[in-house]
Length: 309
Ligand code: MG
Image (tube, rainbow, N blue to C red):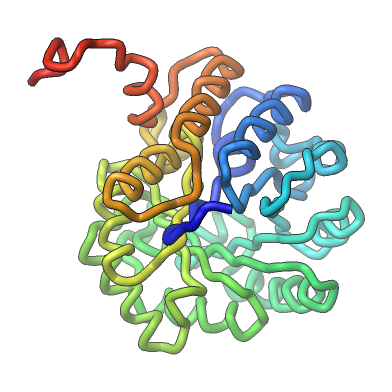
């Protein structure tokens, strides 16, 4: 396996497709996963064991997990919203799960239909059982850098939620900039506060959204603060649910391009990743917002020609 200094956690099949209007059929999802699985990625979040009527895009999770290609060095993850979801995930043979809670109570109630306290209480049980069953656990903290309803979210609130999740047994805390309100200084301040509170850098990940165009700058700020794990969705699939047509998930190939150009290996084959982005555009039948994969498709110009400002 290639040496890597940055880990890219790919979320397109779950977080990406969940936030797009189309419902891909099972074979198309497996084609996407197959393409992503061949890029050198180590972590791929493929589905969610949510109640099928809630998220029709991911209603086939049991069938999908049964048909995942086995690839050495690649771990598949599935989101579980509750104990029933965990039971289904275990039954399906998933080895790694993620959970989600919002730092802001209003977002948690709108998104999960429960108070933040209720969600955390339920996750205590889910995470403990998952750990007892030998599963890896990562916990997303949504709205970690801003809430669409409450605006700024105090750093101390995010720290409190993250410490609870750590105490429940979550191996990794993924900080979600759900609204794309984060900026490089707020990312740096949040990471520093979490480290000060006792959560080591190697247990932190950044899940950044490009809603306002700051995602790559935020990733760099996180990297310079010591974070080495970044979430991405190939081709930037997964728009912003609060603003139609706006960007959401940061494109994984843009992350890979930036870090590789900086001399920080990701272990991911950029050409293959861009090709997976093109495949996904074909499957959805429309262009997607990531930058690098579009550049790769269009970069037929001769050096010195037509790419000059
Ligand atoms: Mg996302």
